[in-house]
Structures are given as structure tokens and as C-alpha cells.
Length: 207
Image (cartoon, rainbow, N blue to C red; front, side, top):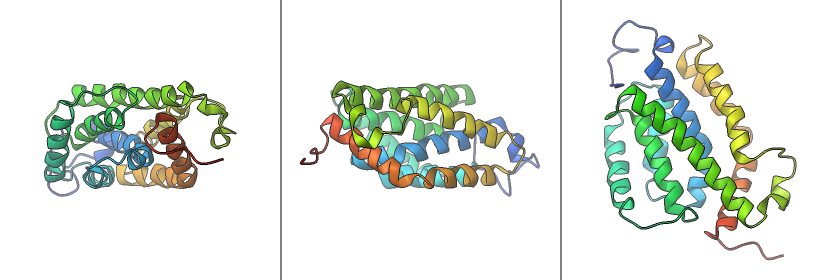
């Protein structure tokens, strides 16, 4: 499992060649794209989630255990709450699961990868289902999007892996993709609001 290390990586090994470090950065980038939806869902531990994502994305060896413990405690309580897939808690728990995989303090590499890959798919498929359920893709905010939200994420997933395997320092790979994501943050927030309205988390706009 990925542990905080001294110096650049504590071993003399190039972090860009460390598969666990690459996985951490990939998971952090996935979570960056979740954040607008999580903001709309009013995730109670969003500050801790964001701190973990940004810290580990920029340095996959950073110790984030304090924030991870807070997220873990909230998730443990949340799992005891009966919820359905259109509740905000459902997506929040998925996001917390990936956040803990990014934190990387408790799980092996294989388990972390499974959580990141499977839960990313579940997150965006759920968003798609929420939008489809009320014919939300007819809304103006979705014009110009030629695929589903999951389809958009699939494209970004390829970019993530291309960046972390390009040979550049992982901090540079993270910042490059992070800037690309931030370039569309206004649109991402509009889409997140639309998901929230389709799900019934927030009131729809008055026509």
C-alpha cells in the first residue's frame, strides 16, 4: 500500500515509475471531476475530501491520514443510513470510497484500483440515470454533449492515464490535467446543478 515517504519519494525511485503513485494521481483526477456534483449534493466532508484530493494529486506520498480519518468516520455512519440511488448520500458514499482509495492508507494496490475504477463507473452511471429518468438530456445545458456523462468521463480517463504514463513528473501530470478540467469548470458546475435538479436535491428553476 502507498505510504508517506521522506524526500521526493523516500526510495530514490522516480515517482513517475511507481504504479501506486500513478494510481493515486489518477484517482485524484477522477475526484476533481466529481467535486462540482459533490458541492451540489452538500457533502458534509467536502473540505476534507478536497484536501485529500489536491494534496495526494500534487504529491502522492503526502500524509493525509487526519483528513482521511474524518472522511472514514462520516462514511461509516452514512453506510448505516438507508438510501436509494437518487439520494445525495448514495453518490457521496461512492465519492468517499474513492477518496479513501486515493488516501491509500489502508488498502493494497489491487483493492485501491478496483475501488477507483468500479466506483468511478458507478458514480457517473448514477448521474446519467438521474438525468435520463426525467428526460434531463433535453435541457439546454446538455446541448453540445454528444455522449453521456459516463461517456465524457471515459474520454477523461484515457487522458489521465496518458498523462501519468508520459514520463513527466507526476505533479506536472496532475497539474496539466487539472488545468484542463478547470478550463471547463463553469460548464461542469452548470451540469452539476442540472444533475441536482433532475435528482430532486434542489428546486428546479422557474420557467
